[in-house]
Every structure is written in C-alpha cells, then in structure tokens.
Amino acid sequence: MITKRALNYTVEMNVPFTDKIEKFLFKNEIAVVRNGTLIPRQRKKLVNLTDLEVVTTYNAELRGLC
Image (tube, rainbow, N blue to C red; front, side, top):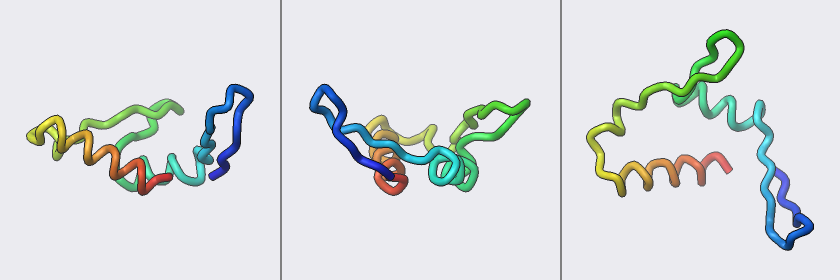
C-alpha cells in the first residue's frame, strides 16, 4: 500500500489490486470471474441486517483490507 500526496493537497491511497483486493474478493466469496470480468455475488448473510450493521460490516472489511 502506497500513500502519497496529490497535487490538490489530498491524500491518495493506492492498494495493489491483484495482491490485496482480488485475493480478498475471492477468499470472502464477494466476487467471481465470468468471461474474464469480475462479477459481484449476492451476500445473503447481510440481507437481514439493519442498514447500520451492513455499513459497519463493510467498514470493518475495508479497514482489514487496507
């Protein structure tokens, strides 16, 4: 993961796609590859959760990823 300053004084974070993101998506069965493209999968365990619980789950996953 590389963090650097951009020209507009904001912080930009670059995460290697194949090293981190792709492994995370396949390990957690969030996406599959069909015809060479990533297709998102339905996450049935999140259906019955409240909006706050879904957002909290996504935030926790992103923190773990980065």
